[in-house]
Length: 320
Image 1 (cartoon, rainbow, N blue to C red):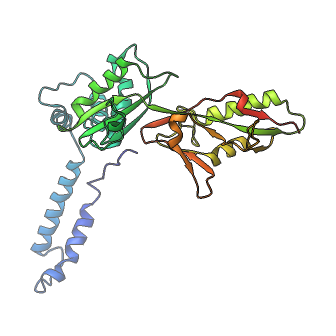
Image 2: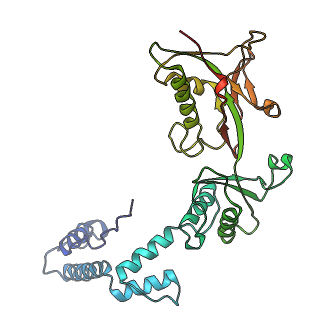
């Protein structure tokens, strides 16, 4: 919210005179005549008059003063091209715009500000940005991407479209951040890494619900919940680095109209219960289990988002 300018001329002559006279007894016991005819009282009233006049003038800023202030803000070569009111507004808005990137919020705000850059014509819009300190996510070495890298800052860019950020967009973001970074900082602008997983479950529909339509709705709800742009609890996109918890999957499924209950699928050959969350063999290390060896979640690192890929055959509709 905008700051409310203080009123500097709110003390009147009477208030100044009364306050000064109330201090006489504390400052000088010899001063006993407080009548208007006393020379000291006359001086108090005179100083109160001048003080009231000065405070009144403090709140009266002339056009020349405003122009001088704007020149201090914008540089000695600045010249007004619009009305002073419009120039004031433009200068204040420019001051509010971040010009230096120190915190993660600074880097993310400057990245999103690229959307307003007139020189980015033809490039896709940026929907989200995530700053990761002390990481070089541009490195081709997988181990280096998860290792401490002092002085390195990685910015993960998610475009508004349903496709990876283009190379020109990443270059534009990096070019915009370079002047704002600290001298010793190295900037890396990258696309998000995606953790691909699937969901496997047996669903028993309520009486009167079409199983095929219910399966489609279940898949749609799950895809929407884990969507990188519109997913998550707040519908602002699945958060960076948020692990996929099995409890949240069950919560989403339980809210689908027509679902009676959800249970684990069983291996058709061995009849053993199978995990509800499915990952590739190379990602098995991400699986988190509790002390009873029960599946709890899929681990997601700070710079990663999730990509849900559901095989319809993994969502089995169990007859009532």
